[in-house]
Image (tube, rainbow, N blue to C red; front, top):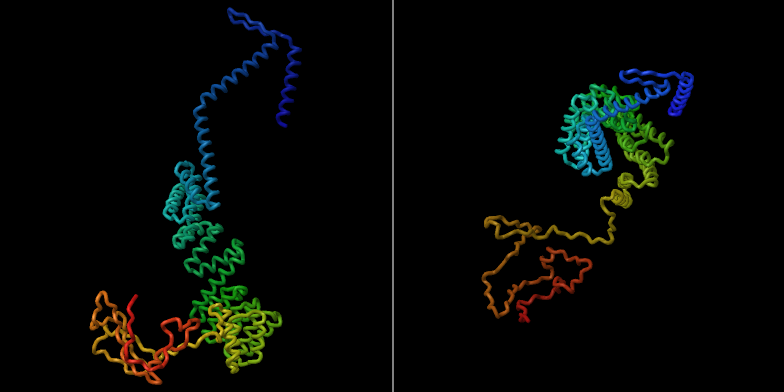
Length: 512
């Protein structure tokens, strides 16, 4: 649009100039001895304009030629910066894609040749990130050092370097070093949300629960972190603080810092109830748990609420039955009611609550409680059934069928194996009839036996004659139960008949 406007203006000026020159048909006389030059006015004006254009073009050409070296240097710098930006861009993309080896190759080249401070800092941080993910911590620290030197006194670059370095140190579980970088950054700018979140992580790793509690509440109030992320931090920090108090005054100080919604968090309520129980105030512990259970019927709270002395069972049963009317299909609540009934020796209601809970969900604790209940009622078969089911639900031990299992052998009277050669001569021998001692026959060789000639078969030693009585004491030392699935008639361990043992040795057969 602007181009067409300027064209119209030039056309108007050209037409106006033509009309003016047409009306003024004068001459221009130029006398320069010995020359006399006479021109028309129109031609003189056109000649002046042409001379102006030629002179302007000539001067611009001379200026362009003179500025050639400077323009060449600027072009080279622009081309170098473009290549650096391309390397930096491709390096960061490789880091984000997880191709860390390729990123290291590109960024190392860029960090070594770049002259721009911003580019060197960004390349150093990207290279440190790639080396960190590869586990090359020495190379990562070198890249961070170069990036810190390139940052100089630039505030933004120093903050970026400190935040990136602290994040890597926290991932390596080095919170003390990360805290040294983050604390000055947070003190100078408390609104730095990323530094605040990293500082919160450093406090958690250091176990500074008071600072975690304060900082999490501050970040939640500012809207830096979501409530679903802040409440677990507040809950765990407050629970640890309550668990570490020793006297009531300290407990009141910590408990007074909590808001009403924070006191009903499960871990906080459990820690407060545990403190009251240690102090012997079961009623106060019950009130703390009731306040939390009014907000949410959580399984851990119900389990703690169901464990109380018998004198508090009636009140807690009445409160739990109110909750049951609002949530009749809550298996944990039914199990808690059953546990309370067992504590108060209300066997009938306890059985009904536990059976209802088991229909909703088969749980190891419910089977164990039913087993205990039936055991107290003398119903041993039902008790054993639910105890076996409890072990099966737990997934630790299989439920075995007793009909397919052989009884264990009685080894109480088995001989104890000793080494006679290492036994001193003066060692006493246990003469107790139910703990016989047997000497080891390993590596035994009788030197008194005659050695057989090379061509003559060796005769086995002759067994001594042993009188056999009808009730031999040797049978008590061994288990005579048959081995399942083994045919003893095909082995050398087949049972012998109780016939008299002959004193004559068996006939030796020559080897083939």
